Image (tube, rainbow, N blue to C red; front, side, top):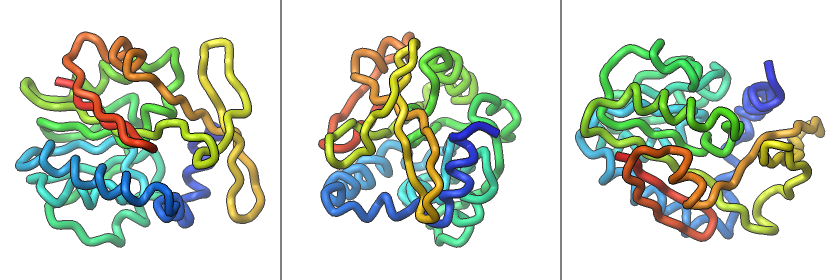
Length: 209
């Protein structure tokens, strides 16, 4: 188990505190309003669903959602929420989505692109394209780096990956991979594909078709 996986397993019960940051409330509301029209009536595969915070937004208009995560601990939290659509939960490796049954005309990868090593981004993007039906959408949302709101970057690797040191409520610390791509870098990484990009203050949203 790597640090990233262990970190999110151990953080599951306290993860949603990140959505309480006062400065991010306007952006969170905007992002939650942008997602439902994109996936209205679609069958959605959600990658790295975590505690289900974004699953609730997807389920507002989706026909169905299969919400996946590598670890059971955050999905246990997600199962306690109420959803407006048919939602099924499954542990799955984001790099091996062929193991997830079903056909999907939309995929949502929320706040996971930033955790993909630079050497793996093309492989990850291709894996998503392989699972979405022709004419479908792959949707990404993630953080922008904002000084004072994000954890400081503590290390940059030779490949350009950036890392943060994060602390849980019990005092344990983890080094967490967290990249902050530009629109240009992201567009190059997911090519070929038409990218629509929206910048908010604290987040970005991209759809690839």
